[in-house]
Amino acid sequence: MTLLIVWWSLTGGSEQLARAAFEGALEQVERDDVALLRADRAGPEEMLAARATLFVCPENLATMAGMMKDFFDRCYYPVLGRIEGRPYATIVCAGSDGEGATRQIDRIALGWRMRRVADPIIVCTHAQTPEEILAPKQIEEPELARARELGASLAAGASMGLW
Image 1 (spheres, rainbow, N blue to C red):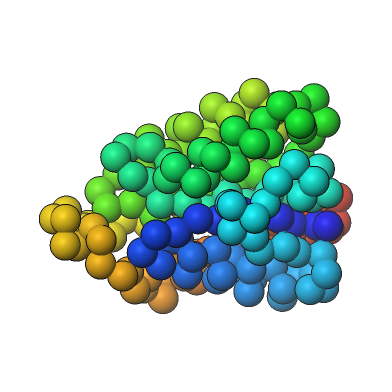
Image 2: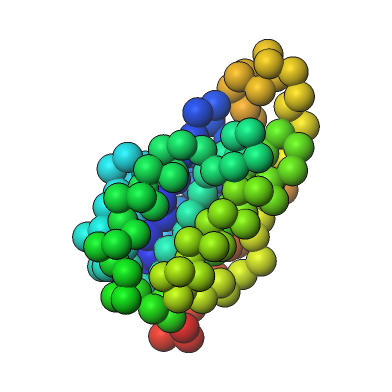
């Protein structure tokens, strides 16, 4: 597999971004070469099979969403020492910041000795009240375009052996 996109979403924002990245990847590689998996359905086998990985999740309370953390917890030791040097990137959907989730993912990837190959994309929805935070999200086209571009870049780079 060329590219694994692991995502989690509660209100739809991160899912939209993950699906946009998937669309971009399909512009570069065959359907069988890219996997789009929710974090609760992805595991060590998929991590080991992928040449590159894109992690997409919301930031909750200045940290990555719990199910994304669960994915990392389940995968960390089974793939430790087996994915060194592999490329990764992140997309975080946040109400106000996104930096906390990005830092957490980077720290885990550093432990795996993965290599960040693109700047993180942080999409800020500016949701601040409980109602806004829990409401379904609609990501704007310019942000979806950035996600498509990142998916295409990761898939192309991995398929060409750039990383």
